Image (tube, rainbow, N blue to C red; front, side, top):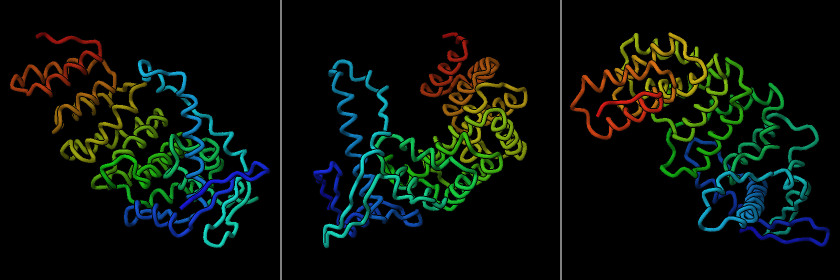
Length: 325
């Protein structure tokens, strides 16, 4: 149980039952995942969420029920929270567990492991995006980033639960996305290898890796093309890991449509088990040459079900083409 109090010196005091706080969050984690059992960090992130929620409600106030859709662009600057001192006390014996600014928990010379621990809790438990000041710490040095990649590779990437708000899923996906633009080519390859050997990858992790790959530009496009072509040449079915390669290349290859990449996407579309997914990918890829590929497939498959046909037609239109009714 946690209680908030305000001291006379404007310091916010949190009283936390350390056993209960750790047990509640740890119970949400999948067996084998990193356990969130530090009561201080749990209390800090719970306080951050209350602060964030209050700021979001303030930002939402000008919108009425008729224009709530416009509120989707609201961005909350988390920086002020880090300037607010906090005292965390154990509710059982009133012992002070932590006192100071939130980032003071790291210490004067924080180790990479300490930074990653804070980032993992923030990514797993915070509302909204990973707070920018914590994300900046993770990517501040090659040493910290290398430790983070090692931690990511040790984690379980499989589908965790059906709900999107699973702490382990949020931690993995947010940290992969944060690290994405800063990864070395070797680190990116390691993460992609880890993903491709996961039997049932988590949806949020899939989306985060897709974003991370897209941030790597031409290099990611070239590597994804090689991997997809190798899988196709080996006769692998375009489903599971190979389908994911097609999805990733459809996103990463948007800016540069090389002949090799398009050839791989065209072959993947033709062999794909799920033509709706393949059509979305070819549409995402953005090469107008995909129009003829999808038109030809529709012409040779007049028995195609309505849902698949509609998805392919939509992809053709996205590329600037039309389909005869």
